[in-house]
Amino acid sequence: MNTSYIKLNAKKHLVKCHFKCFLVSILPYVTIVLLGVLNYYLYFMLKDINFDFLYLKPSYAVYLRATLFTLSICLSLILWRVTSIFTNNYYYLKSRKGDITYFSSIKHLSFKNLCTLLTTDILKLYLSVAWGALYFAPCVSIVATLYYYWNSDEFSRNIALTLIISAFILLLIGSFFLFVTLKRYSMCYPIAFETKENDSLVILEKSIKIMNGKCLNFAFYNISFWGWVLSCFLVLPIFYVLPYKQMSKYSYYNFATRRKVQEETPQKPIIFYIKKRVVE
Image (cartoon, rainbow, N blue to C red; front, side, top):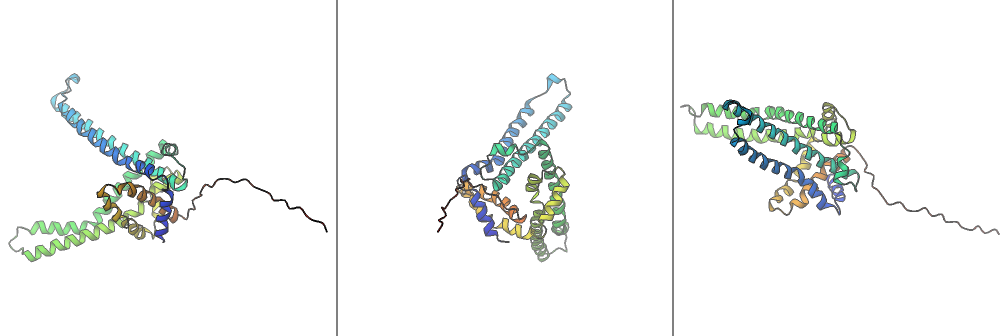
């Protein structure tokens, strides 16, 4: 798969709108930071409220504080994911139509689509935990063995060093396999945006079908952006990297599904040239 062509295609869609795409890309990060600050102050506010106006017992007031704070965190996570969905939807439409705006892209999503995508995110989280438990099980067993025999009289330093190195190697191997495996579910968003499917299991199934045989390639495709991501610590490259990396994902989807993007070209008037026929 020609990844260079895919990246060039992503850059082409960002021409003359890079800063606008950056503002859309940063929205989920701004949202989670602001919600984190609000929850921080909410925690101290709930701590100082006694709920005397509700005539509750002190023990019940503690439970009420915990419940309200938990609800606030859950609501914050939902709002963060909704913002992320809006951002991804904008980039999906941007990869198909060059003149789409952020607010007009929101109109393409219904409340039912949002609920489906939120459910899909939850399923992906459970799948990630399940695959992580599978791939990290050997590493955890080595660490557990090391912990169990650490204070034993028969436990030598050579054995400890061997177990530590083995655990580290197994951790790296498990992380790589988990990273590649989770790429099976990386196309859930574009599939949901394109098909308007309302069944999360069907979306996951279609994503697995599209990525069949492409997971390793897509994993290395994402790894190729790590240099750009590390450069974001210098702050200035982040204006270029965020839109570029986001658009590259949907450019890859278009290429993987053999979807030809229709570019809008200005209509030109049709001119008929009439040539006078000379009769000899």
